Image 1: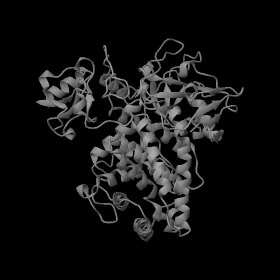
Image 2: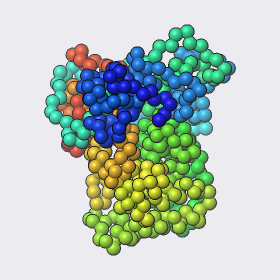
Image 3: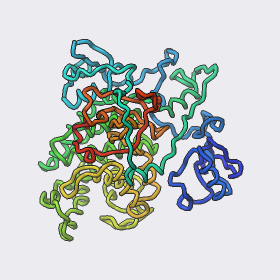
Image 4: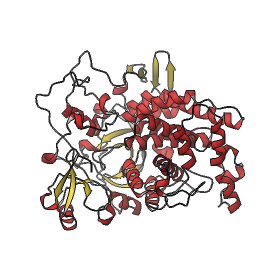
Length: 536
């Protein structure tokens, strides 16, 4: 048992405690979420009736039940924490600015004025990327928003009210209802710093308490639009590098992954800061080839999920490389099989499975491929119950990172249009994957995946209590029901010319004085529209 967890008898449980483990397997309890804050009497009584004792993690508890870890006891730190220096932090010789190794980013407006990326809206950056209105110079990256002319939002987060008092009604879909039951509405973990001073052990000029607060507060995380602008050149390079890999294989040339290695290093750093940024770019930028476009999407999602699981940077990078290369063998499979829009025959299925063997053969002739990457690629189609291929491995015989690769590969396949099936809504895909827990995939990994994507994954659509429709632009890891959103449709379903953003964590109010809330998740299809109508 982790030493950071405290054994508490159920009779002593109180509101605000974060229950990290039970005295029995989670599957023997009514709690679908493995780890939650006690926030109501129903949870408290259920724990008292079921368990003799539980394990409480004080670092995740809230209010009076919270206590930070001692500095020397921190075993794993999110790579994001050190760079998230607050604006109010005192400057010193040792202070390091955020994005210190990143290119200069500039935004040019319609009247040829310049402003910083911090002053720019999500809609401006997103539109510039979608329209290709970007210039890369020796001095940095320039986002030309003259064709966008988005109205500035107050302090970067505008109120979306349009005078309508329409309130949406209706029940949520089954998938949404299922997923909503997995998550609690956690309170903010907030601990005031009193007379905090920096010392030589803290090169960022902030105290341990402030470091913890930065770690847990969504509004302290770099906004996704800032990171999208910063990482954009790297993403462009990753597209070119991936394309070159697939073209080299198709032309029977030797692979060179030296460019990919440098690109992945930068992508890992970006994901440690704001994972949503690269995931947005993967959705925004269409490629001219389905194969390498899907490979890049899988790679980014594998790295982001691995970062969420707190894997070391080197292993996250290896996951990214595996994601790019795990299906390279498909270039050797006949197109009539790969693009068939009906179920494969038994013979065709056996041929399709050969892409693993072909991929390993290609990579065996490539220098500098880590052995761990080869293992991931070899096993990413193995399944928890032994039903996978090529070796029919099961359970503990499948390397954990290969299980992660297989899980992400399946999610990306379900949420992408394929020749034989239309893409699923994010929540439908997670619901289907949940049905595979402890069958195709480890139940624990499936639970982690659901927590990673959350109820409202990036780029998913939601209906607000005003009747407006918004797209989720950035998740909130503290309060899962309160992400940042961009309001794209008015209650009458007309498109907003200048979409504004709302950070639901800050409890913005409607014109009627009510707090904005999400009513349900929706899909573009259910609204009779296409993804492009929502800038995604």
